[in-house]
Image: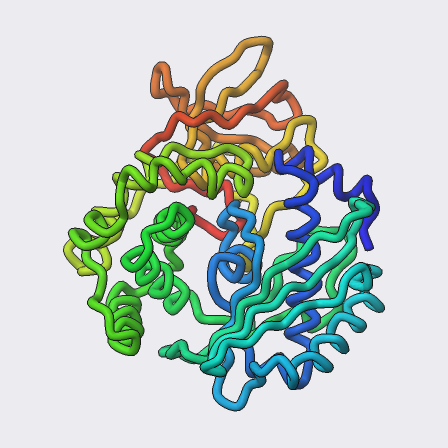
Amino acid sequence: MISRFDLDERVREWSLRDDIVEKDYVLGWLLWGIGADDTLGTKWAFKGGTCLKKCHIETYRFSEDLDFTVLPGGLIEPAELAPILRAVLERVTEASGLDFRGRDFLLKGHDSGLYTEGRVYYQGPRGATKVASVKVDLSASEKVVRPTVQRRIHHSYPDALPEPATVCCYCFEEVFAEKIRAMGERGRPRDLYDIINLFRHLEPNAHAAIIRTVLAEKCQAKGIPVPTLDSVRTEANREALESEWSNMLAHQLPVLPPLEAFWNEIGDLFAWLETVIKVPALPQMRFASDEEAPVRSGAAVPMQVWHAPVPLETIRFAAANHLCVKLGYEGAQRIIEPYSLRRTRDGHLVLHAVRVDNREHRAYRVDQIQSVEATRQPFKPVYQVKISSVGPI
């Protein structure tokens, strides 16, 4: 198990409460235990907001539960699951040091036999005397339209998950379709936040037609109409969204973006989904002669600890959420739009940005940045945002 120091390092870097960071740590280990289990690993398909963050993209929204669709032949009855879940927790304890003995887990089935709700109680690196819990939701009623995929579990902590650190998941297109359906049905703040983030994170091979087809099949299976721009704007009560935006999201994010910026992008999302528009290909910021490619790798890199003078994750978060940053540099403060993080040939990290006051392109050496603060001031990108390690955000 990681130390309290490791936990506090991430609390500072990520600007989150220690219980939220600890839960993210525990979620990673629980997913490892489930994915590695011979019985559950191929029959539970991970889905929902936590699946997005832990296995697909860096959403920066720290979800707090685990949602699975139980595939045909998979176990869902509490009596059958109890010994298997107990064995999973024992393996996780042996591998990680996490303690699940403070209170026995709970499993409660539905009369239909199609749903089970569970709670797993734990004590982790915070050293809290009171147990915390993770909610686990299982459903055997969902139609899975696309083939499931094995995805690597993002684990931004020094105790690497044992190989193979993967879990069975919904594919990107199916997660996207599920989120649009949820936005049409219930219109909660987290659904709006997630669908706009997914829209901004579109993978190069993501096709609107595939997502639209998956969405139609999932809605047909539930006997509900396919969401449209008009229906979402009607069903998602704007006043209710405004009243719940902070309550439901503020503790899951370093800074709460304004609702308006996400609400105003719904039109573009549905226009793209219905192939009315294509997502515009924005230009890259120009390279300096001594710079290499943007800091990136072949896989989505989750939040991490950069060991820089200032928390770089604050900048990455702001960029991903299209929020301006108040930057302290050379003794002065300026408001910038963050776009790209690059490395020079002599090893220096450089932040490329646009100053809001004069619209000029500027480059800032990271080791000379004196302070950073994510603001709630949104911006509309004019260049590709490549602060993330997997291309445009």
